Image 1 (cartoon, rainbow, N blue to C red):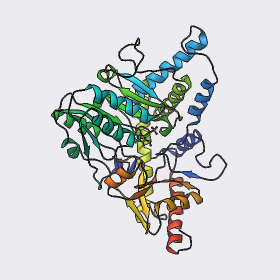
Image 2 (cartoon, helix red, strand yellow):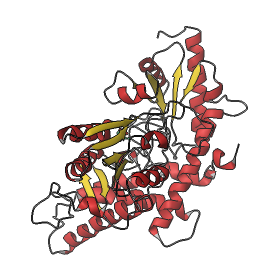
Image 3 (cartoon, rainbow, N blue to C red):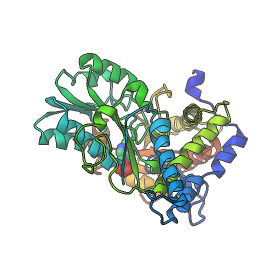
Length: 434
Ligand SMILES: Cc1ncc(COP(=O)(O)O)c(C=O)c1O
């Protein structure tokens, strides 16, 4: 197995420092010992981000006045916009979209493109979150465009490029494709998809839901020439209550919701809280701090990219550990009674997620049994409105999603594996009431 597949763990000193920077990694808010392996549903919080939010939330001043406090808040906002667009998204131009949630951002961007860009069809995939899928379907139907869905590959948990390309032609108005699956962790090859799709239609509008992928890898809208992405800070170590997006210059100028007197490419609508910008800047500072442990640079994007790549390598090592275990502790692939779903030998194109099922026990009950043993995980099942289409298109009825994050270490994974083995043993002995 290649070095890239195995990943690279942070050294133990750095790992400890990282852990200390998050709230409730080993114990929950009531002091109960707990492993939070549900980071795809909302990640553990970076202390500095929560503290920044609190610090600036206390200040009542409007950022649009001409005094020192107002100017300070204005600077917080400018730094936040720079961090979202240039540092996280890798944009060199374009505009910021702010909403309360990432879903609202996706609806705004999708509506604007479908209502204003000529074309007779809209293409998306079967593994999109409902905010991307439903907005594409809703506005395609509203404007009389054909709605086309590229189907998942149940073997990889992603969507093959060729399958997406089959649906694109010179009349495609929009391609909306997720960056990484929030069920399997499969990272789609956005570079290849964009390059090949634009061979069919050179000026094709392409957007990507990056909510799942943003906390695990680098986004680069400039390199991939994307027209829009969205992400949610509460899934990326930050705070709840805001969703962000990037739109390219050409999308920014399309008719959209805005105050009429504002510039044509302005998407800011209303008074967005400086505290939310301070909270995202704290996230970027943190990732840059990780980057600084490995390289010497004064460039913020360079440090951020290094930090995210290091996070990705550490998470790959954790995923390998979770699947393979050690010589004393069997990994998920080797525990009799555990089925690893949507698994792949190649871990390079995976976010830190494993989807499993356990023989002899339902998904909901499995989550409850884990919770009783101090582990928080989540079931993605075909009876949920959020999961049905995605899960079924992956050829499943459900899956337990195991999603640790980079502040965890191999001891946490070992603990989880031991609990899983015990749980399976008890189910086998029928000693628990399931
Ligand atoms: C891949 C993906 N996209 C979009 C969303 C929507 O995010 P929000 O709940 O902030 O609107 C989620 C939330 O689970 C998600 O996982």
